[in-house]
Amino acid sequence: MPTNATSEVEGIDHNLCPRDVRALTECMIVLEDTPAVDGADGMYEVVSSSGSTYTVDLYGLACSCPDAQRRDVTCKHARRVMFATGARPIPAWVQRDALDDQLGGAVTATPRIGKVATDGGHGALSDGDDDERPDECDCWDANGDLPCWPCWRDEFNTPNPDADGDETDT
Figure (cartoon, rainbow, N blue to C red):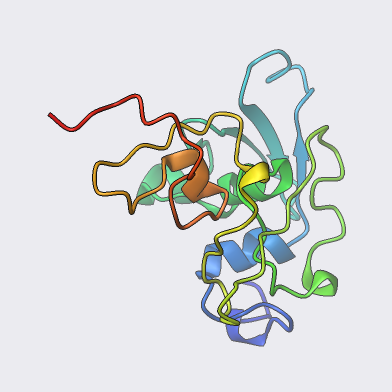
């Protein structure tokens, strides 16, 4: 059992769930080119601080660890892969010195830092710069107030104003 309780991790906001805190702070290595996952799109191996190795499917958010298998949760290993590969941004307010030094060190993708909230709050989504919308943006909303999943994932809280709007409300 770790000696640091979640509330004792300095520089990590306590609004993050405990698995996110562990994913960002515990010593783990994310590998993308091991024989078990080499060439498999979205598959990674994570070596934990205990030396155990788990296979993570980034697209299915599945992991071979006991936590994910028994509890049917997105475990710290899958969360670590999301943060390490930039699939999920690290909250902008997280102090960089609180992060594990190995975060993203062994993958070709780069961890991303989320956008700072425009309202001064911690963890709130920002409107961001529309030039930085994800390539897979497919925003359209009949009501005009919900972004697509890629934009939401990248912390845009409004639909892309430059979206095609190909879909129609019938």
